[in-house]
Length: 32
Image 1 (cartoon, rainbow, N blue to C red):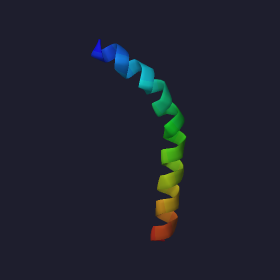
Image 2: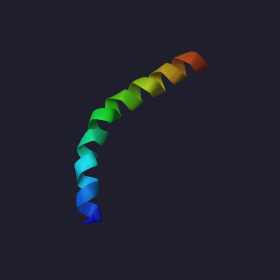
Image 3: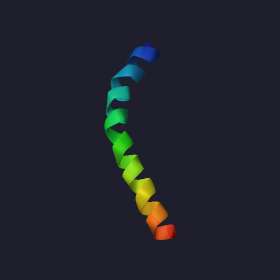
Image 4: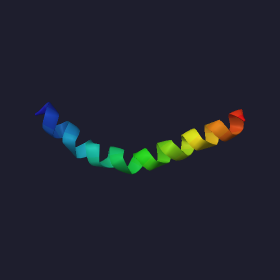
């Protein structure tokens, strides 16, 4: 049951993935 519940939010995680990449790029820019 837990595995099934994890599968549902898994799709949302993919949508957030690109957002995390943008945040990382912004962090790198700030560091430089």
